[in-house]
Length: 319
Picture 1 (cartoon, one colour):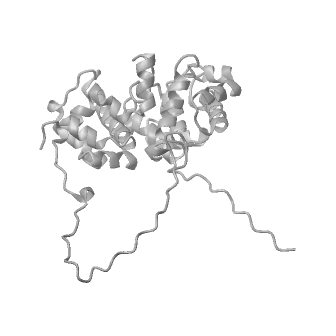
Picture 2 (cartoon, rainbow, N blue to C red):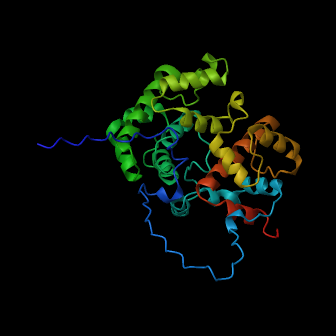
Picture 3 (cartoon, rainbow, N blue to C red):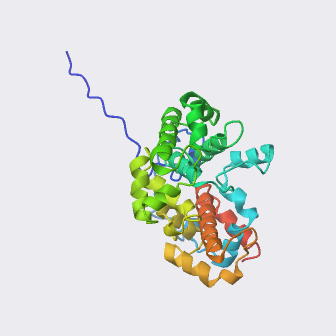
């Protein structure tokens, strides 16, 4: 008998295969295969006059726009649709502006932790945001440890079925484990969504907080912690300023400062030029909130492939 062929082990998802690294074309969780077209054989050009080299539009210089204008656009409601998947735009139109979305709503630290777990899964940006909308709105409202524990596995899995997402069973299991971890180790009871226990036990030290969260939250690795830190710094001063590499790449594509410290410094220097309508709190709180919104809009714009749209809308008369 001929020898049996060895079975190759299945490929495991990498750490960076998250909702914030998946291309826009994977919005429905479908693999996009490339068709290889054989190149045509070049005709003999021995006696043909040489043509001038063709210039690629991709490498052509782009107009350098005023970064303040781009930041003010990102801080405005007008920029929201540039960082949203198309199905979220339609969902908001159909269900109203009160719909809670990752792109526009303020979440509790517990909800942000749920988002970090979901968005660090190997799914597309659109599927991640759709899962969050489904879980956090009617009729489910899985927004506290108690509501998740009371619901149990099957209703949570069915909610994820409604979201037409991937990894439904594993995500449902992880959300139940997360709720138990908050009740037993990270919070103060089933209704607590502040995670203040984490900050107190870690003396407001982000490095210690990261270790505590990673130890107790199944499925929360580096990518998930980066997503959580990027958002939670609006409420937790000890994490500010923070920007992950994925977001810094999005900032650079918009012509904005490409390091954490440079962005913070730029915002501080141009603070009086920024349009801050809707930002409340002390000046320090406003600065953290502005910093977070710029990061969130920039990464959303990049994931949706709308950097050129933002540059055009931010300065429509630029030449």
